Length: 220
Image (cartoon, rainbow, N blue to C red; front, side, top):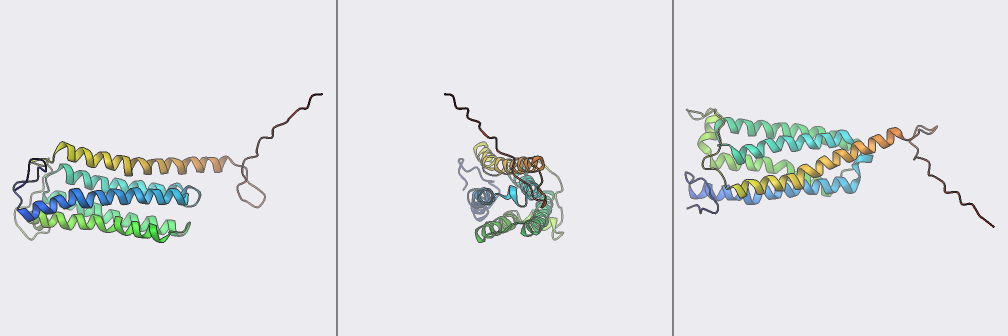
């Protein structure tokens, strides 16, 4: 039986409630930490000087796609309509990852550690979707046309998760994923402006801005 502290859906059986806890306290935190780790790697590689703002813009698109999916799971009842939204978000995420890697691989190296983090970021959305389909198997089956009476409505989750659970997930995502990647995009734009303002040498490369010389006057 679910405790008041957890506030899991009482209509779910014991296995489904355990899987719901696994999603909230296992899959989601690892996913958020993987996003933060990816940002740290990008920062250490200084992608603003290689792939630049287009890659960073794709990172923001990835964050937005999964942000919509995560908010839907946290706030909405898992109806057939929400399952379609989640499936489309996962597909769009895959397409965006492909575009991101295709662009980045031509302009910078992607070290093994970054590839490993990417694998986590790619797999976990599908792991979450499969777990949700197991927890809410009737709604998932209806969305696939395998069961009658599909619910295509969008409504708030009832009973809702605890406010502390929702707030914790949102704040962690904002601090460890959204804010860092927004900062990355701003850093890339700033580097791009500096490069455009820098003079171009005869060879066609960007020259660093001239350093100001300090003139020292000697007095007798």
